[in-house]
Amino acid sequence: MEKTEIMGLISAAVAVRKNSYAPYSAFYVGAALMAEDGTVFTGTNCENASYPAGHCAERAAFAAAVSAGKRRFRAIAVAGGKEDIPDGYCMPCGICRQMMSELCSGDFIIILAKGKSEYKLYTLDEMLPLQFTL
Ligand code: THU
Image (cartoon, rainbow, N blue to C red; front, side, top):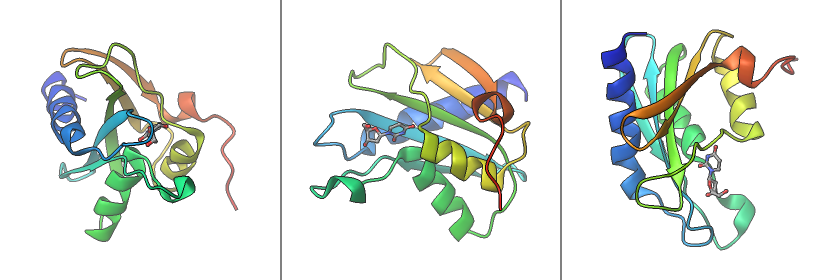
């Protein structure tokens, strides 16, 4: 991926994070997902008084993309934390990694963003080896 694409996805994740609904954890997450054709879909976590009904930002972005007919993806950027500018990396949870593995190949890129310019890159194979499939 080109650096400009990485920075664009990080900006989108950081921007949408402002819409996160997280009154219970106060942990605010934004995600920006790039489909194979370059289209970007965003999502935030959305919590609920019935805690298990809440969902993560990554899965919200995938739901938006799949709803728009996308089935192939290149990368996702994730920015999350309790602070206005996160001082740590938000690691995608196990359920989100499993969802990625259904829709993405092993070389799918996961960008973890801290602030607007610090980031780390992983592949899905690194994040979820030995994936479960039916
Ligand atoms: N969360 C995400 O949105 N993505 C992750 O990968 C990890 C956790 C959200 C879920 C919940 O609303 C809050 O962060 C605290 O767990």
